[in-house]
Amino acid sequence: MSQRQVLQVFEQYQKARTQFVQMVAELATRPQNIETLQNAGVMSLLRPLLLDVVPTIQQTAALALGRLANYNDDLAEAVVKGDILPQLVYSLAEQNRFYKKAAAFVLRAVGKHSPQLAQAIVDCGALDTLVICLEDFDPGVKEAAAWALGYIARHNAELSQAVVDAGAIPLLVLCIQEPEIALKRIAASALSDIAKHSPELAQTVVDAGAIAHLAQMILNPDAKLKRQILSALSQIAKHSVDLAEMVVEAEIFPVVLTCLKDKDEYVKKNASTLIREIAKHTPELSQLIVNAGGVAAVIDCIGSCKGNIRLPGIMMLGYVAAHSENLAMAVIISKGVPQLSVCLSEEPEDHIKAAAAWALGQIGRYTPEHARAVAVTNTLPVLLSLYMCTESSEDLQVKSKKAIKNILQKCTYLPALEPFLYDAPPNILKHVVGQFSKVLPHDSKARRLFVTSGGLKKVQEIKAEPGSLLQEYINSINNCYPEEIVSKFLPQVQVYAWGRFMRTS
Image (cartoon, rainbow, N blue to C red; front, side, top):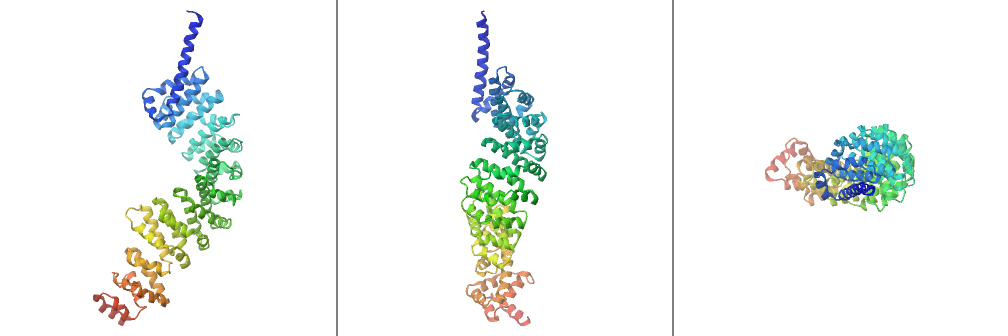
């Protein structure tokens, strides 16, 4: 055989390897092929190709592995059990930028599935190498490394701490200052994933100077970047008053309120979440938001969207109202109650209804004026039906019941209370009758209306245990009227007893 013929054998072998990895990488993009590839032993065939002499074969083999590992945790587990990770980590430090991107993709694909798989990546020494990649000249390598670090950190505080200990935070903060939008997005996402677990981890992000750089990008025109920026600031602000105040001091108000009108639904949601995480801490922070026009802006935002996008805004209104009666009144003045009532009636998801019920309860619990503002929107019958509906979740029933009690105990607006005399179960009915017993002795017009509307008649039909609180309320109501009027509505068996009661009292 001539030299050319000998070399041709090697060329054909190289061509076959190239064709194989390219086809596997292509097949791995389609979910229907994954099981067949797995059963054919594709992992063990790709592993040696990671060390191939031809760089393009190495890169494509890594890409194929990443796509397979990305699909499910069984295949990701196969990467770990096949001792592929140490190979990738070694090559990550030595190879060119194309291979680095592919190798970081594999690490991300493995680490995303579970804390155990992410821990396997940490155990093979990948973090130090990934952090070095954050300093790479190529922005694509930085992006791939930041993505992998974020996916490892998102699982729990221990893995996040490992990422911090590897020195990732200062470099991620530098990455958000780079000109490439994609790199900014991924770096902000990674910082968010680290900060979310604990006040201490959030503080490490703050100490690296992240807040100022994040706050500057709130008005960036890229929607996906804004989502991550708002998320990162939320994850910092949620932990404590001090951290929330640091975020506020970066002068995010009133700038962040413009995000509530963004075309992107998730920008709206994340902006509402950020405002909620600040508002929940103290009355002072809530008042700052009110003064900036934040309550009215959130109410408008709730009205412009549906479903889970509404949820953080609904909760934010509840947190603001929960702090004080003045802040609850600020929500009322900004027309928050009608919007929350719409959410309570329209939203199909129980957890969103439950949040609206809770928020309405927080608003209505302070004074008769607060309670009336909720009652006039016809919210109480809706809350009652949700409480009594057997298909409502337990959380929705509990929150509806609590809201009804909060509002009823302050409500002196009798037209809203009267329907409850007919529909409410005993545990709610006693609060309704109690409110009538407080109002009727001091309001002659209300006493007349109570007779003509049939309310007094209905009260006589209530079966109360002698000596019970409910019976005391009924007696207080009856004492507001002459004996002959009350006895006209009493069932015959009670007329005699009532007469005796009136003579002795």
